[in-house]
Amino acid sequence: MTNPRDRNQRMKSLFANVNPDDLVRPSATMSADAEKRRVGSAAVKSMDRAFVSIEEENKRLHEQLLSAESIIEIDPDKVVPSFVSDRLDIEGDRTFEAFVEGIREAGQKLPILVRPLPGRPDHYQAAYGHRRLRACRILKRPVKAIVRDLSDEELIISQGIENSERLNLSFIEQALFALTLKEKGYSRETISEALGRKEQKNIAYISFLTNAAAALPEDLIRLIGSAPSIGRPKWEKLGSLIQNRSLNATQRHAVEALISNEDWASADSDQRFSLVLGVLDNRGKSESAVTEIAIEDGSVVVAKRSGNAMTISIPEKRIPGLSAWLLERLPDLVQEYRAATQKEGS
Image (cartoon, rainbow, N blue to C red; front, side):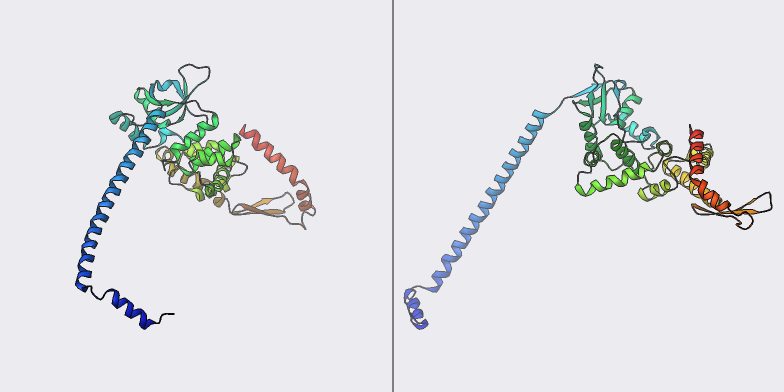
């Protein structure tokens, strides 16, 4: 094995006649040339990437042109809405008037999507674009539309195209839309896609939506409107005040009195929600006082409401056996009460 000293000697002999300055000079020249080649190469690569990008963009545009569907103009009176609405009271939305004026001044920029109605030539059903459709009907002008053959499921999923692009569907609009689709037998996955919520983690949110809407009478929801600033907690609180998705007689009378008030007529949707929540929530609080019921023999039955519960105190010594009799009869009394309230509501 060669020792380190021998190796050093051999290296010195290899470069013994070489000037160190000459070694530095060519190295610098080569470095400059390499830098020019590197810069030139980078520029060429950049141009290549630009050309590739342009070619890819042209290819995408070409494919879009080949697959593009023509936009036609349709009489808006020959277009019916989707069989499942995702909006509450379009014209009750205070931004809708400005929306109509925008189309009056600038025209309809985006087409709506429709499908042909079987058995009705030149008549269609809208998949999405209901605000544009309604605005064109008000302005008495044709509505621009793309016509596409769609199944029922494809139609509601197409509504998700817009829902995923816009953020102005309120919580209760999403909830009622989801519940309607659920009641028609669609899966949570389909409902999620129709709402523009394709991510798996958002499928669980569909249950929150349907549960919230299922606790509320649909006519009460439509009476209130979209309530864009009202989120899930407050809608769930309102639902907790209502049993079996129906207002009882007392609640119904309270709401009827509310909507006949001048404040209701001038209120927007958010304010209407607050008014309804207030009158139903305060109804229980206003009746929290103790009620005493006098019996013929001088006995007094005391009823005390606390929140959403009522406690009835019976003087057992004065009326022995009444408590046991009431408990035994309670199921029949509940059925009798429900039958009476259903009859009132019919």
